[in-house]
Length: 537
Image 1: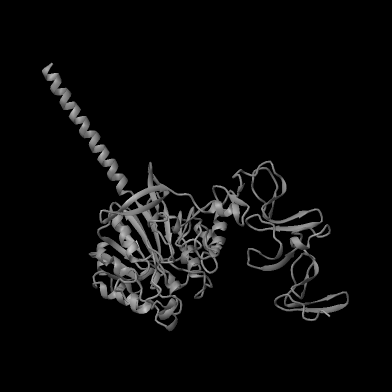
Image 2: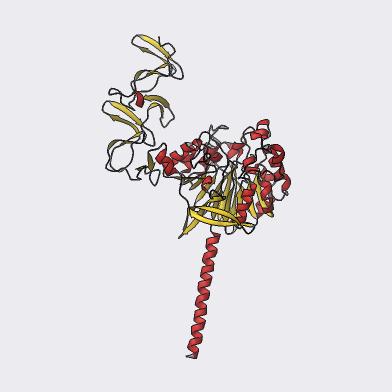
């Protein structure tokens, strides 16, 4: 019995040890899981994104400078300091998540809302930290943009760094020795079709369990620093792909005739998480071409809401709606933290067998006992559902773009057992069967022709239809306020059309005449490149 008691004690101790080790390993695995932190942007203070893997940290952009920090910001614009979002915000957040030293920093471009906070995070730049950057464009517009003297922030950063830290991506062959040694940074070249030669060069490196690729290394323009932004792809094997677009825009440069953001999308293809270009602007960034190439499941905008509201800025709504129809969820970094505290929207990676997925969380930080810590981690809902319900789009697409199964926004129910014309909100759709797939293209009902775009929406007013060989023609469909029994809403118009004090002629197939002459009822009429008849009377 005495021996049995000993064995029992030993067995109990071993069991406790195994449980303890398992719990420790579990906690370690949880703490070491990859995370992408999109730090809260409350008042247009700019971008700051933290990449975490196995207890190591990297940073993409640093937000703006802080008034009173002693930086060059003081002498540039003393009355326009950001109230909330600046390098101090970034430093406090990094402290809260346990970052002591940054392995790398990527400065996407040299606008003050991306580079201005660098002096505040200088204490986290270690001897081994690699800082990726490009020299700024130097011209009057960029030097005085928003009165923040962007080039001076670059000079400040350059003076704070040792040569060992520096990795000028535009001159990679001649520098970045420590980056090549420490992170294994190497140059590659892309041969995707229709890509400008300047964009073909890229850099890649491994960071713990993540692989990085940097695009847009050369200077695309000397007059618009936004389009010189370094774009960053972050990939985990059998896990999510994350694309960080800096402030890239759809403006075209070079021989391809495509915007830089679109050419980057051509090289990358489908991903999971997209940090929108230029803070989510939909008027000159985040084109439908780019969104179709990336096919993101999650779309993140580094923007504040409208002042005093929880509503998105008007110029961001179009991409949100476009992506929602493809089943994507959208977030504003302004959703992070709470009304009293800063924080971040965080993509937490989750191991699912051999694969890795992710969930979106809201982290809130707090200053306790003289230091910053994470106060809460909560689940986070996307903003697109409320926008869709109250705003523009009547339908939201299903699980995959290919399926095009349409759901009613109000009740999220698949449109089934509905054949024919269906109106949701202010849009008309046509269903040819009961599988919930909306019809696209030309459709004839009775004596009238209608055109439904690639999202299934019936067109009204002027619209353009292009063939596969990019032969485009303009058409006109009856607007709601002009509809009657003879010309139903959306029906294709033929013959003479008087619109906006101009005469046009639409052929028997509905196509607008342009750059031509036509004899109609014995008289020859001339039509210019815009389709306007130059001799209607």
